[in-house]
Length: 283
Image 1: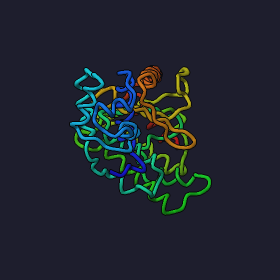
Image 2: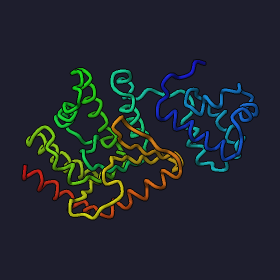
Image 3: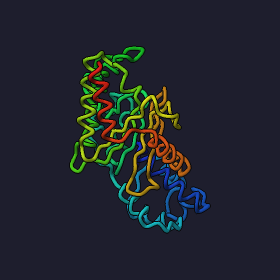
Image 4: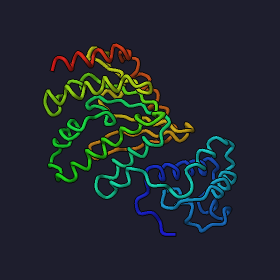
C-alpha cells in the first residue's frame, strides 16, 4: 500500500489520537507494531495519517493499548476504512489545502463554535463579500483561483443549511461588523444576511460590542469543532500563513475556557440581531 502524500486533517487527527493512546500505554511504536503483527514502520505511518487502518485492526490496537473508553473506540472505528470523497475534494490541488481541511472539520463536526474579531464568519459570507475579501490579497490572486476560493467558501454554508443543520454558535466582534469590505452596499447586504442566518434554529450569532470588557483571544479567529467523542474535538486558529489545528487535551480545555469567557461579554441573541441591523442601517 502506497503511503498518502497529503493526509487530510481527519486522517491526521485519527493518527494523533492513536499516538496519544499508545503513549498513554507507555509503549513504543516498534513494540506496538510487533504486538499487532505488522511491519515496524506501520504504526508511525498510521499515526502520521499516511496509512489507513481497518476497524478490526483499530480495535486490536485499542486492546493492545488497554483503552477502556468504548465510546472513544467506537468513534475512532467510524473513522477507519476508505475515506469517501467530500464535496471539498473537487478543489484539491486548486486552492490551499488548509481551506479543504477547514471544510472537512466543519463537515464532520457535531457542533461548531467560532470567535471572529476581524471577519464575518466564512460559513455566512455572501458571494460579493467573499470576492471582495479575496480581492484584497497581496499579491493579487490569479482570477481563476480567486473564483475557486469564492465557490468553495459559499459551499461551506451547507453545514448549517443541511437537515438537521449542525449547531453553530458564533461570537462576532463589532469591529468585524463595521468593516466595509467591498463598500457600503456589499457590507449592508452582508449584515442583512447575518441577521437572516441568526434566525435559524441551529444558529446563534452573538455580538461582542466595543463597550465590552476585554476578553481572552481578543485578536484571534478561532473555530472549535466538537466531535462525537470529546477526545476527538479539534480547534482551528487562523494565522498569517494559514490554518493551524490543535487537538491535545490541554489545548482543547484551554480553548473551551477562553470561548466561555468570550461568551460572557456578548449580547444576547435578540440584542445581537438588533445591533447588527442598526449597523446595517447606518451604512
